[in-house]
Image (tube, rainbow, N blue to C red):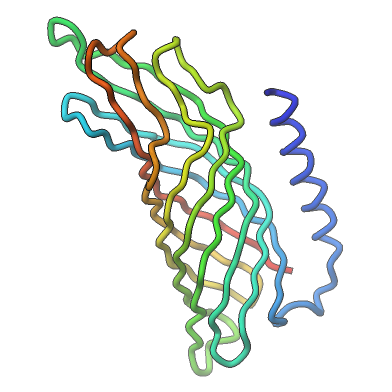
Length: 212
């Protein structure tokens, strides 16, 4: 598993180095490449009120590809990201004692978004807002089980909603909210008794991207 994570990170870094050599003439074209990095603030929601879990922090980094149709400024972007999420899980056990465990999950994340670049008169070349939404596909790279009781699913499907600003046609600062569709983790009765609990990811992500 460690070799797989190292291979993913190395591949992203090599591609990023190649993108850095793309000439600036591509700026303003319908097809844009770039590098992206950011931080995650995540929350897991459960179907049992006795359980409460939140992902307090994490980070993400990788590559992005955008296509925007001229004139109408509507397009699509897709990214290949290495994402690390810290999960802090709180639960009430026997005798109403609150216990906590922490998991560290690594994902190969592929968000695919439909986006609208909102052109502004006069200042549009210097600053441009945009909106986006689309599915998010995450593949687990780290260990699946924690203490043989907390089971992370190998695949997680979510949906992103976000907005951002593009500056000087190169720098993009964006924020998005990820809504979990499938269960990202589950618990069995080895630790939690008879309660079978499924967890879905809820996460805010703030990223910065540089487009070539």
